[in-house]
Length: 481
Image (cartoon, rainbow, N blue to C red; front, side, top):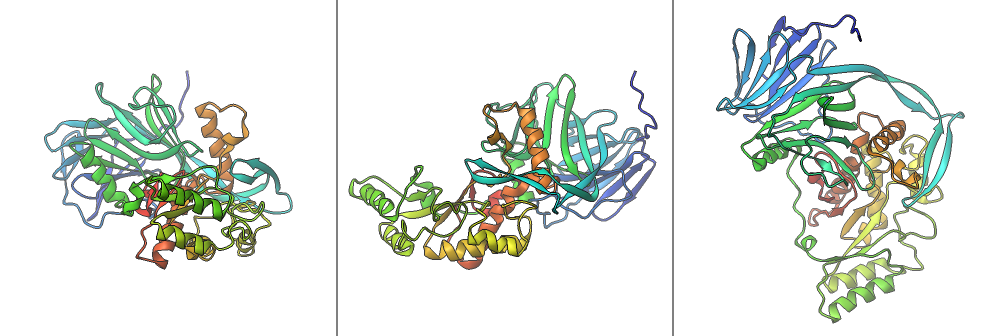
């Protein structure tokens, strides 16, 4: 039989109160319950002395303060708002959630419901020992690190939250998957990014609540004979939000409270968008738009897919001057015909391009890579500067931010890998270039670069970003996933 040595007791032996939260201490760690409003409760857990000040990527802390109180019974502490109660078991520290009528919404596993496994997180060291392969993909040539030294960064946790779903409960969410599964009960779901997959760590229940994991790392939902849990790959602490609501609309309202309102799209974005792979020249684009008008076929936007750049300068944010001799005249003519113009752009750049050289000189690329580091504000500002000067100033109306899940190891297989293998490959590769605790969120910060850049340049023009990937809070940035 497997013996677990030095198992720590989870019985609560001390409680500390503040104006905003209550902390429950046991040998096994510190549990924090923090009501954010009458429907939303933030839950954090650590085995260290205290919590970090970090807020999950994409999450905005609600501006108001909740009215709440704590009641004590013989068996539990009850953290109560007007809409939801979190019942913390004194003996096990496990939580059960109830609505205002006392109806059970969700229960953690009775014992050892939260497990943290600490590990050492490393970052890449780019030096003379770094070996990189160039790989041709449908998203252009990308760099794959074959060998590299690394150095210690900090200690993080693998987190696992065990939950007991109710028998007639259905669960939805976790982004966009390919398998066509609607109710997630009885399945395992891998929450990561891929070319045809969008992972967003938000779960909706028919019992009247939602769970939002405050993480930027890959995650796993599992509901099998081996147990039901939510797992995150790398976090400084366990951190999630419980959102109560009578129906999905109310729960999604809570999600919007935490992550922001969707940016209003322009009216034309709800019309017909014409695209193909691909239009070759300025003349062809104008001809196609003109034919729509002459034939009385509705057209609101025409799209320039990849290869607007010169030669093989993939990712360069300028037009080939031979095929597009006067881009501004082209967009002016389209606008006269009431047609908008969208162009695709990439986060990776050919090393021979001027855009790449500028990023390289300023050291604003991901390590040993040709992808810009969208997690850094100065890199986002430079990316927009290039997009503005080369494209937006020429009359561009909208963006197609392609390959904004830029680490796509699945492209390297002749046959699509199994879901677990895709998850492991993504985690291993993305974790080389980006902090593992953020690597699921590249699409979010890339969209942020385009939205904040454009709105900072021209507030009269709404942002449209038809993009392949997104993350928690991406609706703030004018994205269409």
